[in-house]
Image (cartoon, rainbow, N blue to C red):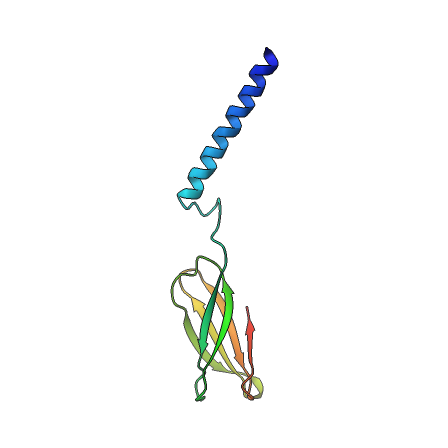
Length: 106
């Protein structure tokens, strides 16, 4: 009989912990389950260029706002764009070479 009570107690504890974790997940508790990464498309339009191109990047799920972009000149005629999501602080650098090749640095 003692063994039955201990098994019942373990089952009740497990059910209680599952209920608490599902409540945290439903409430959007970030320490419990962070949002999954999302894939988004950036329209790359460097200054001093008449061409624009699109690139797909993967960003954290908390990056929900539109990014800001800041362009600067790099070595060998490259243009470097830093895309920053102010809501989460995530940054992605996009390098456009002199020949128009696009490289993404996360």
